[in-house]
Image 1 (cartoon, rainbow, N blue to C red):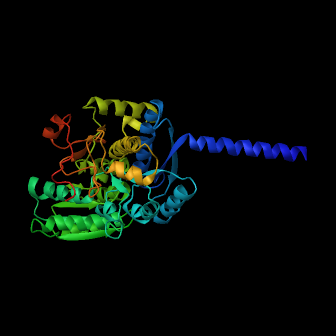
Image 2: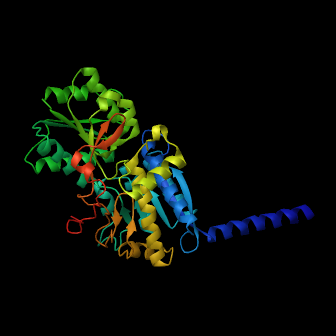
Length: 407
């Protein structure tokens, strides 16, 4: 009886301590792929979130409470993302979730946050549809926000680079079979159509495909002068390696994922010169970026002092500070109040990508406009500025273009 009483007392104390800890922290979910082919993006995103949360906690936290990160590996699987969303909402009671790398996972999972009236800070996934899933009149309020450059920004940039800047007339598109690849393909064909052009070849591939010979031969036979891509690192590397195998070298221009470490490393020389839109390039050209890069490298010690996915890390880092500013303004962790604060954020947030001055409105949940990204290029195992003019102006602040916002 005495032992049973002691056990009951211990259990009560543990539960009480747990509840006290929960009351003393603000829980953020962090959902992304930390294993598998998308992991270079997911781990970099997670570490960017960790870095920002640690800085905020050391500075006193938010509303006198520390941020507690509840991290989950969604494995880039839609069904796993759905399970995690339900767990984070119903069991962990997060006040917001940061992350999403894969467009399909985000599409499948975000509806649970929308129903629960909990904000999502989508800091990597770029599918154009993601901030438009929950619009009036069906949904009075939209709880999905983004700090990444949507595909309807990237696709026109890619086409402009290939057709206008570099003068290619015959364009082939290779896109993966996921939601990300196929929605990106749609955005690319729209951008080409705006220039009265059609691709000479459109080829699909699957995640984990290791031989792109058939797709590349069709593009070559169609006379393609350039390959436009929508996929992720491992398969993109197989495109570059397939071209090397065929002895056929034409430029590769694609979405931002060509900057992933597992493209650069796996493609080797075949990846040299690949170009892609980037919101952030790992170059310490401002004090804020210098501090961020130094802190990231010191804390996480990545190989060769190269962040595996600099864009993912930077956008994630910024999203934490934007969310923290909204909670401070709302003076609450209530989801509806946080959403309202995000839509009318009064405090400027100095980020790594840009300074966020009223980044969102009720009708516009995109923090990035087309004037912010620049072109990066793979060179000697890293992504650098593709154009000297952009590098020379790298320290210039590219602010959100409010006139073009929401278009």
